[in-house]
Image 1 (cartoon, rainbow, N blue to C red):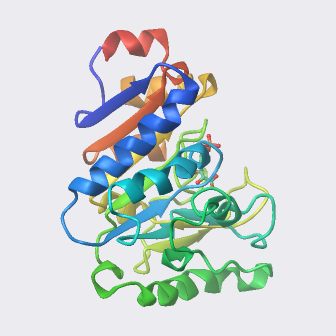
Image 2: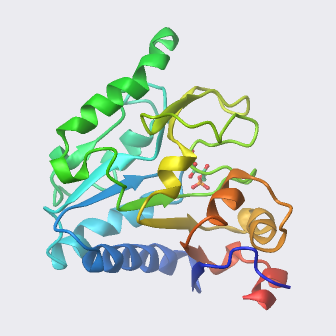
Length: 250
Ligand code: 6PG
């Protein structure tokens, strides 16, 4: 069966604990080869990426890249910054935990705890990002967007049940997915598609079904599939996320 994602580079680790190192090494190699002296990386949340983020400081330091990387969020739940569901809390506790990387290079979403302020967050984030080095400021393309995939095929906070293809000139938009306990801010699909590099990190057998469908079913119209069909992508899997059926097509 043909793969629906023509320009997908696929890397598969043979175990869960090797997955984090494979992903971190791949990310650093890509950044090391990227043009430009500064790099803007957009970080997803959820759960998969944090063991990968924990390995980045040492690898980036060895590569001489620790001062040249700047970090933003792919999406964020609108909860307080110390809430257990806060992505920026988990990013601080992984990517910046050992103090090697300058936390001043991290530009987290200015979350609003009051629901009535939610519509102001995209604008507030955009003005925060004007403090990035000029060559990294929007609308410059993001150098690398790190993404996960939900079991429903969402990526970032672009959920199937939302108007996820809506554009927003700010590059971010407020989303209120019915399947989620809180509103979120997410990069728009257009801003994701315009990035230099898209790296999907997927682990765990629970993802087999959605990944098989994204790669083999041309009728799958979930956000991840629609985005990934439009441009080159890199996928880093642990082997439990790949079904036997899909493996035969790779
Ligand atoms: C979020 C994430 C989200 C995540 C997927 C996969 O804020 O929830 O950005 O898009 O990447 O839900 O989550 P896991 O990594 O937990 O499988």
